Image (cartoon, rainbow, N blue to C red; front, side, top):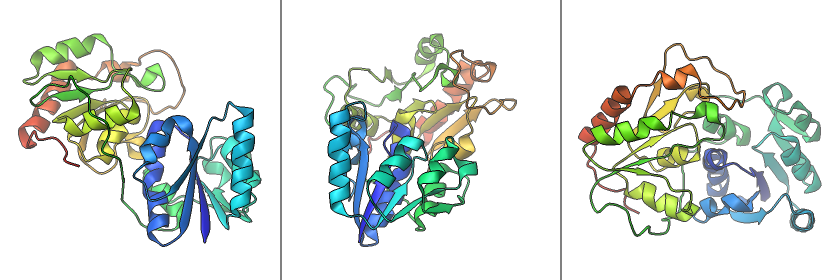
Length: 293
């Protein structure tokens, strides 16, 4: 049976959908995943057929819709829950179109395009998406990545200081102070790196420091030790999945998903000393060996 999985983006969200898509494929189904071209490199080791496109290019959208309709899918699972993803499932022509109930969706009108609506189970978004497809799963089949030439020869901590919006970020000046107290180099995620290079660098790191953003979720998917800094967003729903990363969050942090562009008090409350101590514990208890492929 041919099955369509829709999760267009973004970085961390594509990773969170990977166990559900992989579980479908492992169950013997013929799975196609439609995704924004930007994130397609994440899926090269996933046991699915990938259809990538640029949703801002109308001609590319038309091409993809025609390709999906020609495939004659029996069911489309919308793991994104937005109007654009729900409409794409409807345009695919799949007679069964499965998504979450409207009360769960950020864009409730998306539910109008589903033939079946599922109430999510589980606290974390990974568990909720597995409940949508009705299968257990835990796999994050990620590619090896592409080597980065100038990484330190010995152990290092890889840090990512950018998030989808500024309210999820840690003050920029803290990273230099943190680097001064760590026993190994602190390497910053570089904007010039491609996705395959970031995967490689994450595999090589002894530990990671991340925010609620894609690079942190990549580290969690690879089982890396490290620290994840949380402020306004909920680590129960959107935190690192799998238990390898330690979450630091101020006890009085208010949960909100407003995309404000100011660093909140809850992120400023995470001191350099507290973050450094947590990273030191990760380095002390890990082998400091890179994640082998």
